[in-house]
Length: 354
Ligand SMILES: *Cc1c(COP(=O)(O)O)cnc(C)c1O
Image (cartoon, rainbow, N blue to C red; front, side, top):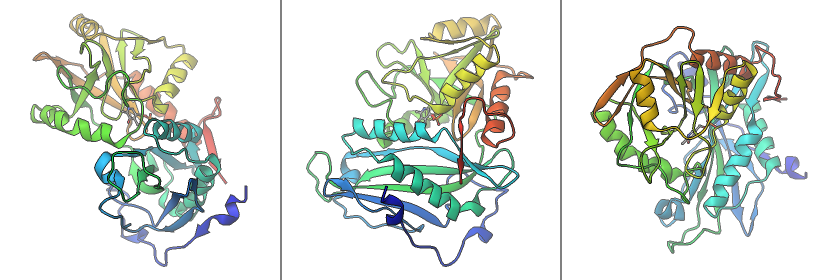
């Protein structure tokens, strides 16, 4: 662990914090004073650095620009009313970025670098984490291939970076979604389970078509038959039929979300039945027609829980009336309370940054 001594910290001379309106934050547009950077060269990760948030320069031939060799994570830091800082299940994010990296033939990032880097960065930019349930600092670790060479093969040099952006939980007004009938997000044997940059670029066009029709998001179905409901653009999805929840099982097309697996656990703690199984579009339409579809909601770190107010499939529109005492709001509140150190953390999900 000679690592800590090796972490170079170059502090920013000034802070931008006073120019930021924390009550009016547009998600992901404002960044804190510092960032964490670590280079992979000569077959290993070099000494990491924390430096002022700044532009970086790359050769135009850097492989990431040509072949999309890039993966990322999304996580948050929270502050309680006593000023303690917490992460939520950060081991999961570390494991997942390495799983994503392996799928894109990129090197794994060492766990001690990940944690020491995050902790040092959060302590330096601590003022940017506002207390109060719903406030957080969104953390974006990512890795890109920097080697200047445009042959189509994995790079020999990479940059691992963490940037931080203050956030309020967003996507809170209910969304209208279109169920995919033609386009696909991922396929068997593909990279759907990885947080690979290209997965998102590929969704922008079909999502823009959905937006032209008045829907904010697409719910992706399996690429082979378009019969099974899988997940949304950056969120896993739950359906509530009467009092039972259903969510799709993880497979190589679906991102294994931390929020999803936490909600499955919370449902079990609360005695709510949650079936993890394939879900057909038809059964959800049938449930909706019978008035049995009570809720549909997306779940993910950024929005926590995002309720769906309507969906369309084969030109048939289904409205889902807003429910008082919804499961979605219950899970959102339970998760936020655990994340902000307001309620008991019986599964050991909180990680205090000391
Ligand atoms: C990040 C992401 C999720 C949600 O994962 P969390 O760990 O809960 O934030 C779901 N689906 C996709 C496609 C994602 O990229």
